[in-house]
Image 1 (cartoon, rainbow, N blue to C red):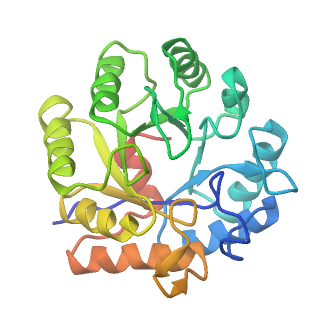
Image 2 (tube, rainbow, N blue to C red; image 1 turned 90 degrees about the vertical axis):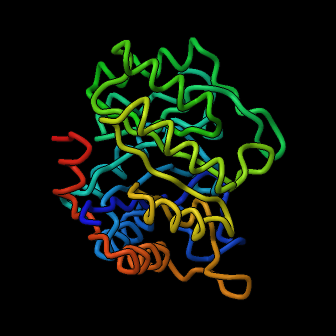
Amino acid sequence: MTKPCIICVAITGSLPTKDNNPAVPITVEEQVESTQEAFEAGASIAHCHVRNDDQTPTSDPERFGRLLEGLRQHCPGMIVQFSTGGRSGAGQARGGMLPLAPDMASLSVGSNNFPTRVYENPPDLVDWLASEMRTYHVTPEIEAFDLSHILRAIDMHGKGQLYGKLYVQFVMGVKNAMPADREVFDFYVHTMQTRAPQAEWCAAGIGQNQIVVNEWAIAAGGHTRTGLEDNVRLDRDRLAPSNAALVRRAVELCEKYERPVARWQEAREILGLA
């Protein structure tokens, strides 16, 4: 398989703390350093959250701005993707950083259950976030926790509501949402291939499912996501020493399936980014 595989590194997230793994980068400076190591290891997309000094999540545009500046300086060419996820803020505060015009931003187009709460993405908020992304030329990465989210994204893209090329990420293994189920994964891939053949897709697994879903995606010709946001361990007995270590695992899987790892230039071309 000759198609390059784009590796996204989700460097921090909203939940993991240094109590879970001391390698989780919290400050902007730590995030930049950790991302640079992951970039050099083979990641071409950085999926970014920011934190307050007490490690709690925030959507503070000032912190996102400092992170964007640092990544552009130390990881030139890397695709920067901001999170508009619901753990970091409420309502339109979730998109307050979009005027900074990152390359990409995550977009959840429907609601679903999370481990202890409902992840709410009401239609009016989804439409507003999509509109802001169009205004600032930010390509969405659709975070699909359910089949309905994939179908909704395809519909929105067909109606011109989503900026740029359609890019859908399957998120599997969140408790109370879609498990890491191979039959479901295969149907997701089939749905993308038959209903949105010009689109690109990616897959992410949570916790111990990370390496499993990485392998499914790479073997099936898609792209994949790794990083300390989704999983803080190498295995049951070892914490991951860095985001770069998790990226290197994905690179090894690319080598196993004889797929080249996309350089940032190739990733931008595949996703239609400047």
